[in-house]
Length: 269
Image 1 (cartoon, rainbow, N blue to C red):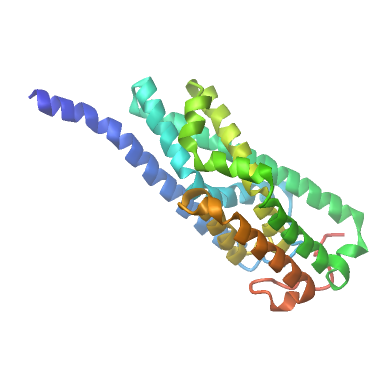
Image 2 (tube, one colour):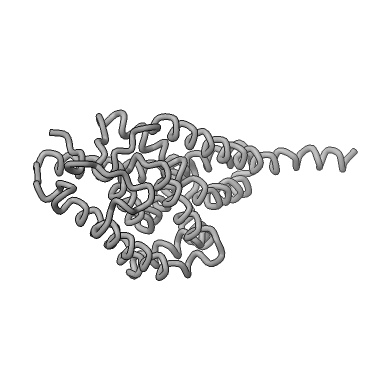
């Protein structure tokens, strides 16, 4: 009888992690399905019109959930496990993990707002340099090449090291309660943005509504953060991005999945 009671008491503690893992998988799959459905036929190449702010933010958050949750999942799961152990409850552990994920996505939402504001400033400037048949392709190529150079900087290494070492972060930066979970999620999201902002700029440069490029960027981010050799691909990735930038500038029509924007970067007048 005692053993049965012990097993019954232990089951909910294990169930919390399973429920959270299943929820992360479900949310990621749903986000990808919504993203593919909403962006079907919308890829206009570099400078794709981002639409109204409300629509863009909703779509951006969905994109970030699809692209970033897989690489953030180990940290979210660890937050649930540590919270469950400290607070002594399955529900609290899952709740803290959800709040942590919300703080993480809030940082990426802020990144999207900055990107949107920058886009609108460019849209209002009417720069002839951005016309695709003039300097637009070289501007897009320079952004991609610049992202490659960033791969080799100390800031990139510091942020990537943080993202690949969740236990070290939690041991030295833990905060109790829901506010603490939100704060940790925001801090982790900031490091993640520091690690991946260059790759996100690549996405904007080649077409933010491009599903193939979204998949490529998401896979690179996952490899960097999760795979055992992820911390060793910075140099090859830097070379690849610089080469891609030159390719876009010299012969954009031959770049796979790159939609020709036509006369310009499709900036609204």
